[in-house]
Length: 184
Image (cartoon, rainbow, N blue to C red; front, side, top):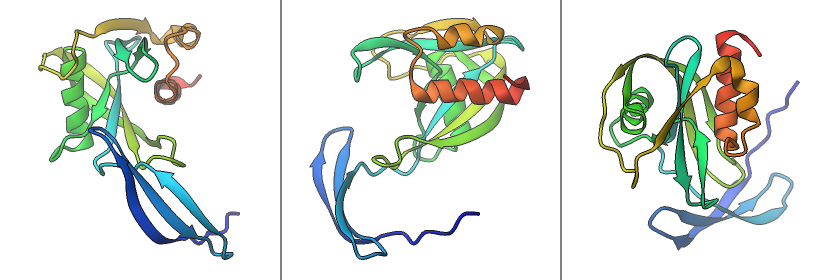
């Protein structure tokens, strides 16, 4: 049984840094036991993001290999992106598919919404399975064409061993989808 915790009171907040992509906010907190602390966090934009596991057929999923500035490397993962103003998560998912892999989806199935490092970020990502794909390409914001990689879902353990398939969100999406489609 879980007891409901009382959230700490935010007694002050101020922006301590801002870039083109990120803002860092300092919040002063008073916990219910009287302890005071100062935390820093990155508040979210409020719209969230999507990640999509596109199924080319019942057995094959599509991934993308793209440059990741954080690790200065090329990483293999599922198509993903931010939800634009005025879009639903499903609309963003279909748009990202068209931009990143050149397919749209007749069917998008919601799998789960996950938090990304909630101790530091206010960011949510909604994971979908996409199937009944059809060819349609939209211009994306990537500086170079993404490599689209087909992978057999039955070989998911081999995918987990790939050194460039290591993003926690993609790992979570793979295992959630594998479980959803028939267990692990």
